[in-house]
Image (cartoon, rainbow, N blue to C red; front, side, top):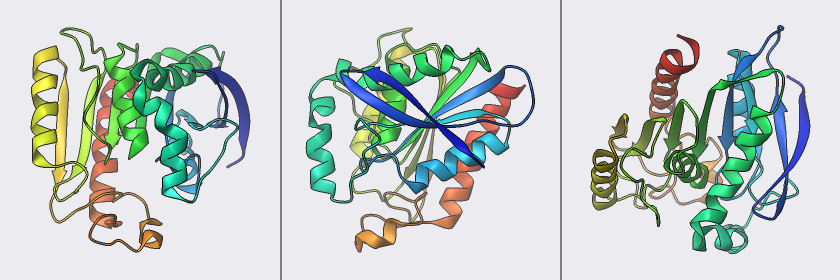
Length: 239
């Protein structure tokens, strides 16, 4: 499926994201797809394309600026450190993607959602915590902590967090804190745990990191979490 580049700014970054458009006329639901820490690569493009084939406008989002893609994790984390340090900056990147899609004449701004993977999953949750006017925020194996937990009544989106039960980066204590936050703010939320599953379980390229006890693709968890997302989308974007 062909894509097109759209440019916009957010948190001082020149963001260069890739847009996938479904066939057919009229305004459509839209989904922003946030990548892992490395940036806008094949994994997030493939997910955006899948969503477009299902009838959603899908934006594979740049997080580094200029569409940059890292291979070295330390360099990627260093580049993103300003986002880690400043939650407003962090959320600003996601909110910029929302504004870019909402302004399009082929998008129904009343039917938008966000998803993300690893770092992008955290960004999806932060968008919801910011009170963004979206129908759903989905996190795949992303960190659940926040420097600015959601305020009571502050989350408009339905929340879905899909987490590996053995993910060393998201221990049980972090999951418990997230649950407490969601209860406190009154969100409509769910968290799915996948047994015998670690980090990056949706990414078929995880093996290249050669850390199977830490990051590993899991076909069953990938399929189940994607199905959970589609079920939620059927409720809030389609039906």
